[in-house]
Image (tube, rainbow, N blue to C red; front, side):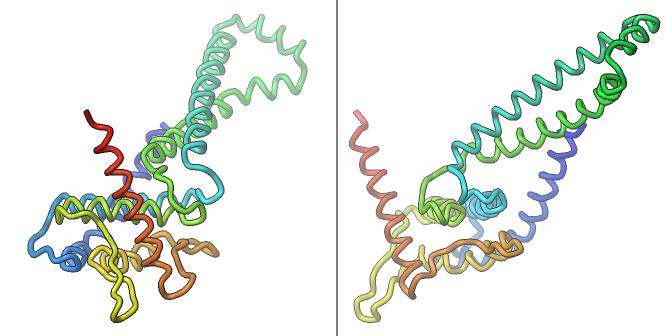
Length: 243
């Protein structure tokens, strides 16, 4: 029951967040020159923003996401195992004759009796633990894509937006340098700049705003230039490995 409630709460969160994002998608399409709604682009951008928000909520700057996911998966497994064991124990004790249960109670004392009566509460708590850790582990499975360790949520956003840009335009996401105006430029940069205020607002938590490149006026362009160059290099390496 607790796992179902946690999943329902997660679905409500996703539904509300998706509705907020959907109102901005036409603007993002126009930013990269799309003249008609693009379902794949909208889906990718929605996923990217939500993944960014979720990553930031988990305060993932403190852990590697892969390690955190594995720990959550282990906690989920152990909680389920403990839950099943306590349930079996409770059922076995409950099936004993009352006279024998009374005899046991005289030997395990008052603290033992309190522990016995607490079995159902312990089982309920373990259900909550297994439900929540299972949901978090599931969401984290596809999020660890590297990037700056102190801006992991932003890296998730940038990679997701790059995926959406490439699907919608058929071009690789890239950043250009305008030598005349001495600034970074390009459609992908403009897309990130357009999406960032909404992602920052959705991810904002008391005392912990979304971490983004801010060191100097070229910080965002430089970060995205490094990121897109790395993506292109990785793609080229993958192509070379193909038979």
